[in-house]
Amino acid sequence: MIRATDAEGWRARDLEVLWHPCTQMREHPDTLPLIPVAGGEGAWLLGRDGRRYLDAVSSWWTNLFGHAEPRIGAAIAAQARNLEQVILAGFSHAPAVELAEQLLAIAPREAGRAPLAKVFYADNGSAGVEVALKMAFHWFRNRGEDQRTKFVALANGYHGETLGALAVGDVPLYRRVYAPLLAECLFAPSPDAYLAEPGQSPEDCARRAAEALDALLQAHAGEVCAFILEPLVQCAGGMRMHHPLYLRLARDLCDAHGVMMIADEIAVGFGRTGTLFACEQAPAGGIQPDLLCLSKGLTGGFLPLAAALATQSIYEGFLDDSRERAFLHSHSYTGNPLACAAALAALSIFGSDDVLARNRATAARMAALAAPLGSHRHVADLRQTGMIVAFELARDGKRATPFDPGSRVGLRAYRAGLDRGVVLRPLGDILYWMPPYCIDDAQLELLATVTAEVIDEATACA
Ligand SMILES: *Cc1c(COP(=O)(O)O)cnc(C)c1O
Image (cartoon, rainbow, N blue to C red; front, side, top):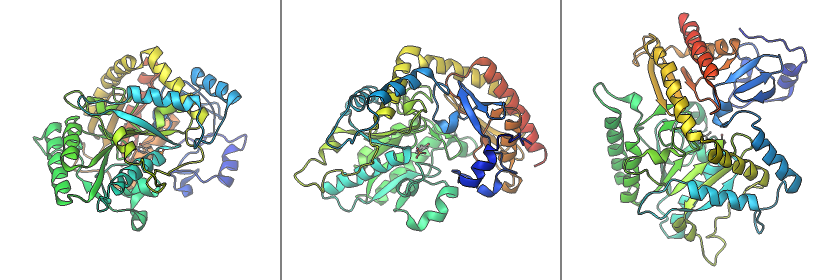
């Protein structure tokens, strides 16, 4: 196992003072490697130990065009020489305005529906979700519909770690201990195609889940303000994927029940699924949510920033003589100019580099390289949406028998990957590829070879 040298002492210094996210700190450094990074270059992370690590998870799904992408770095540097930060209440600046204009211009649109018309900034994904939840709730209050206090979310969904976002998430590992603190949320079954019964198609799963959503909204008529979902891929829930038909059915149900639809595209937005936004893939020309949450790739993975996009009608629901009816939510760094400049640079790369076409070609290459692994006896499911490929590992290759959690198959695979210079950070026993868009053929081949080896190694002794 990787126990790279710590000649410079960074690992020791780190463990003396840092408390890392999403980590049982007790596992560092013996069970769980801790890798000091000196730099990044395209799809590579450069370890201080002189080794290179292929960043197959895009540094928690944030990175789009590679590490240290020079155009984004230059845009941030130029902005920093001019204006680093200004209060966004009572003041304005060009990067915030231009970014809002551009986001609204590219946001998902649906014929016959008033477009998303206003951008509210926050500084991380969870905060962006909080904004959308609070807006939905407050909008109905302002209309005197005080009984609409509940949210509906999907089983196995994930929307972040702050208490409001956690309340609408359903990954037990993150949620369970905090349950007493969380706002009331109703969970509808996930359209997850992996949960199909024998003979059921992904469309059948979508229809069945939509029927359950309908029944839930019916049973709680007048009590629900919004329905929130991750379109196409429930990422933190294990890269579980559903048929785009569900988006259409859910959109129609939200309309029928007078409930707002919040699309959380924090992980899947900006080209990850093959279209700029996942909502575009819904049948009949795509769907448009009432509120759209963006973050992660928004700045190309350079700086924390989030945006909640809202319709004009939501915005107007807060216009009044009273301050209490206003949406007073704020963060110190709301609309930070450096982050907005990074986002503008990232969007301009979409314009200049034909990113979506390249992604489609890369996704096809990923499919071809992943296919042989699908017949591995411990790969219960191989699934893909655009530039996300997931390998569900199980004991007998049939979804019925997962590995004993105690055998830590995913963790073994992770360590085996690092030994070979590839970051395959798992979700439980699910391995996935979600690389920066700049990944090239040779890197993809390395990724596929290493994935095959680590699946063998991690499952051999389980
Ligand atoms: C990562 C994520 C969030 C939370 O974003 P943070 O910046 O980590 O707070 C919310 N929703 C989805 C779908 C995510 O993947």
